[in-house]
Image (cartoon, rainbow, N blue to C red; front, top):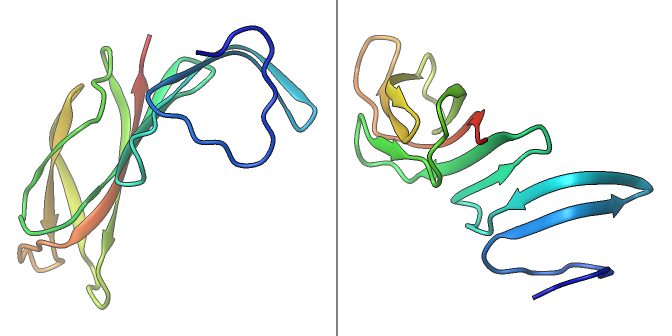
Length: 130
């Protein structure tokens, strides 16, 4: 447990969630609360100073229309979901977002000629937290 004023230099690793009530970095000071998750690269989230929740993840591929579950549910609304297919030489491919809700979404992968795809992809989403 940390309390009072703590100073860290270099790379530091924390487990679980971290709450920061006052942060000074590179001469700029933030007074408020920032929540960070240490879920790793494949699935993670952060609460931004303005109260929005930003999440991201990785789908390893294998199904045409996988259901993606957010690491943390949004409170009432998802403002945006973005995806990026990870495959070489697939021109005109896309991911259609279906059944979007505060807990997740279905990612339907299609090629320009409507053929189904099963590729790996990254996703990110932003919405409300508080």
